[in-house]
Image: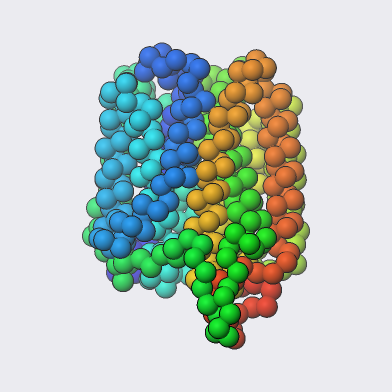
Length: 411
């Protein structure tokens, strides 16, 4: 049964990105096919991420009522319905995209809970993280072939992704998702009392919590800006639409190993001290490299960007554990970093699109994203320094510097 739960989790994870990357891979076709004003394309890229930022509490609420497995299954059913509706009813493209984003976030926040309930190791988390990247790659890479397979019908190529969502819902419902069913949530920023009778410092007053949240939000902001506009940028540089979509898929595929290994390597303090700020600088250089590279070198440069960007996502997930003093602290930090982080990330596609529209070129957009990556490096530097996040009673077995060993699957 444990193996079936892991399989179900991976299938669920694979479904949590195609709703975004399928549209990103054919962004140039959307206005003509769906009769959408081109000025609304930045909004189309922003809507799912904005939904991430405001729908985080839905998952825990559903899990308390129905159990985690049923809650995730319900979210995937809603996702499947949203994918069909937005593709078949042009007037509902924007609302359907927003609903799909809400369903994705609802399922996403519960995946770690199911891993923990089944005593999954850090490698479980890594496989689920890879599932995100694999789903993103499949969505971007297959949308064009599927369109051709359906006789040039783009709506059908977008709607067909409801099928794997239904499969994920069936599998996670079949396995029950977790052994316990219900989810215990952290409840936000309410103060707790330590073993000595003293009140713990709320998250909003802990600078490490804000640094981790900033790192999560900034890397997500970069990711969604890149996935929303990379294909459009490549087409503007002379690549065919199909080739641009394939490179967007390559961006995700190239990063799969990095998303798995980054949390493991981050468990080593000596590597973490270099990795946390270094990844931000590496993303900045990779963005400028994509901007400057000729078409013949874009395969290499997009691959490098995919590696460092995916490593940043893996590190962001790992920092929640590494810089928390215990499970309750990790839960509250996860809620804060994902909720506020995705709200910040929603600005990425919008600002990138507006800068392109305003200037008529991509230079300022990529330079602004590179500057943001430098700020990401600063957030990484601050996130690994200072006291660990602690909102729970003291535990004798907690690490004094918060560096839990993820390489051994520490939660």
